[in-house]
Image 1: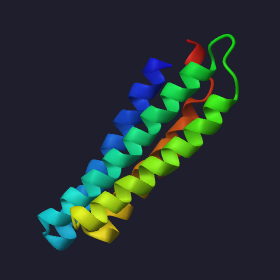
Image 2 (image 1 turned 180 degrees about the vertical axis):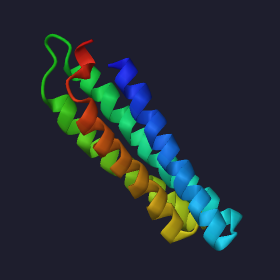
Image 3 (image 1 turned 90 degrees about the horizontal axis):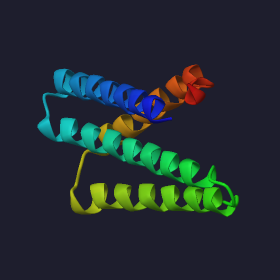
Length: 120
């Protein structure tokens, strides 16, 4: 599972950097680049939280409640991270969302292609 997670995070990182480069080339705004990087980092933290909860839920005797808790915890993290980014750090909203969504899409596209490789 660790190898798959490393590949997923690597692809999320590559997608985030590509989006950041696109925003830099088109807007020439360091704030937009930081916003994309923050959004991508949020998506990576969400992926790590999910992997941690799935690992814990796969242990003998673990219940399904941990996975439900994971959904709540990831949702709260995303809401708080967006609030911090927009209200306190005053990051660029479009770039922030582009970084987050781009990294999430990269995660789901990659996770689908890596399905079944966790047991090797």
